[in-house]
Length: 152
Image (cartoon, rainbow, N blue to C red; front, side, top):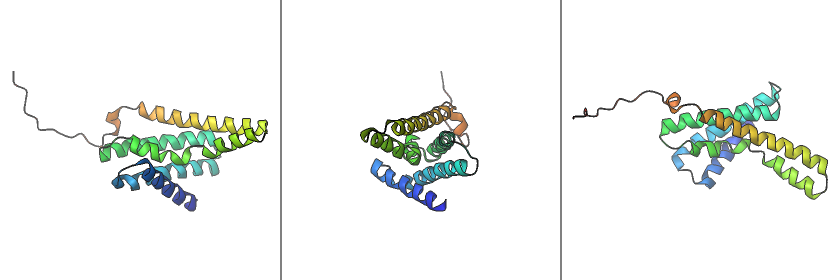
């Protein structure tokens, strides 16, 4: 599992480079992607969750971490979210769906396609649920501003 986590971190950082993320955020992006993959792996192996359930909870974690890091680093959450969700995207499922369609193995294409669609919906649901949480939840401490009082 450690090897998979390292691969997820490096894959996420590599995608961050391709996506044009500023260098100072690479380590955070790698952390978010690695954390999502570790949770996915733990849930599928030890908690015996389905791939769809594990994808939902991992996406939920990725979005939570992205929003916290966005507040911490004062940048958009999409910097961490877009790159951190990368290890969870069902690219292999989509590939095998297309492969089975081309080779006229429609039953396998339907199985793989349906599993990929379920994973995509789990990711979307995880993103939507966390983005419905108010911004005030993610603020670590309230900053005081020393603005002059308004005079009439």
